[in-house]
Every structure is written in C-alpha cells, then in structure tokens.
Amino acid sequence: MSGPAYQRVLLKLSGEALMGEQQFGIDPGVTTRIAKDIQEIQNLGVQTAVVIGGGNLFRGLAASAKGMDRATADYMGMLATVINALALQDALEHQGMASRVASAIEMRAVAEPFIRRRAVRHLEKGRVVVFAAGTGNPYFTTDTAAALRAMEMKADVILKGTKVDGIYTADPMTHPEATKYDDISYLKVLERGLKVMDATAISLCMDNKLPIVVFNLRTAGNLRRVIMGEPVGTTVRA
Image 1 (cartoon, helix red, strand yellow):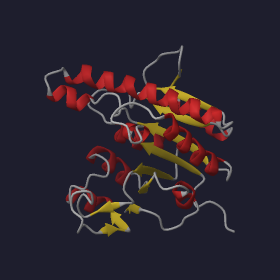
Image 2: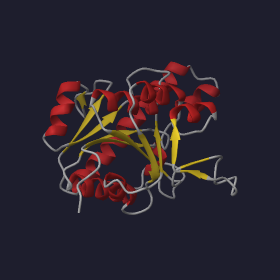
Image 3: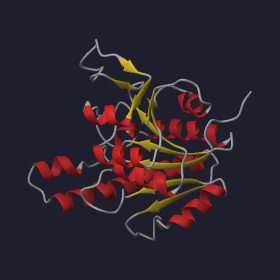
C-alpha cells in the first residue's frame, strides 16, 4: 500500500460541524468522532493542524446585521472559536493524542498565543495544533484564517470538512438536480460564486497555489481516504 498523498494538512471545520443534530452548541459525540478521524491520519504520520469556526455558538455577521457593531460582533465570534477549540482539544486528548490550542487573541490561562515557529515545531513533534480566534482581526472569516494558517504552516492542502460530499453547481439540499464537480479551478469558484470558502480565502489559495479538497466529514473514514489520495469530494486547484 502506498503512503499518504499529503504530509502536512490543515483541516478546516465549521462551528456547525460540532453541533451534530442539535440546533446549537457542541455535541461531545461528534467531537469524539472527529478526534478519532484525526487519530487515523496521525497514525499514518500525517502532521495535522485544525482551524475551527464558531457558528454553532455565535455568528458575528448575523449579529452585526441586527445592529451590533461589526468589530465587536466579530471579536465575540472569535471567542466562540476558542470554546470550540478547547472542546476539540479535550476530545483529541481523550483519544491519547498530544495537542495544543494556539489562539490569535492572547488568553494564556486556556491557550498559548499563536507564534508561527512554535506552531510548526508542535507539528513536527507530532502534536495536533488547533488554531483558534481566527486571524485575530475583525472583518476576516475563519475561512481566511484557514488559508492564512495553511500558508504559514506550509501545509500541502486545505481539507474543508462539510456536510455535503463536494462542490455542486448549486446547493444540493435545495436543488436536487445540481451536479457535482470532481475538479474545479479557483477562478471558476470565484466567477460562479460557489459557496466553498469566502473570496478572500480562495484568492489567497490561488495566489499561493494551495489546493483545497472539499469533502463530507460526516462519512466515517472519509478523512483517511482523502489523505490516501482517493478520489473523494471535490478538489479546487489552478
């Protein structure tokens, strides 16, 4: 059997990925399942970093649409990502993996501050690094944070775990006739306004030729299949 197709990856999770079937919050069963998926690829020798959103707890954009100051709302959203990162760290450590939460907003009692070289060293030592608090700046999404951290860590790929099995011509939940792309270019994603990641994140990946694989995180074993180079989900590349 051949080895992994990627040696260092950045896994992007939405906050909603942690909700499971709930309407809100964190389902410990889901964090455990994600931790087991990560353990599978760690056992293959793959270095794993994670960027996590906060939409299951607080959505800055939604709050600002209702009149809250956008910067304040975004900072609150960043704090929500720290809560999710700690929940995932707990699940990882229950599976026996060493992990670190690196926060873009300093809060030394619960996470270490993000320092690029230190984060790279953690990866080299086989620890899972969970990046929290986005980029630390308002007006930037956790998608952009994922693209930025992937560049800084020199990751081989961004793995975007979602609840659908790739990128479609339209939302397959509301348009059953939508067809799936196996491969698509960054430019087509931007031109067609496909909701993969926001435009800033896609542009950043395009400028640095960093591929993105969008796949269904809810299907058991999918993360390992992507790592082994199997044709799972949709790949965005030049």
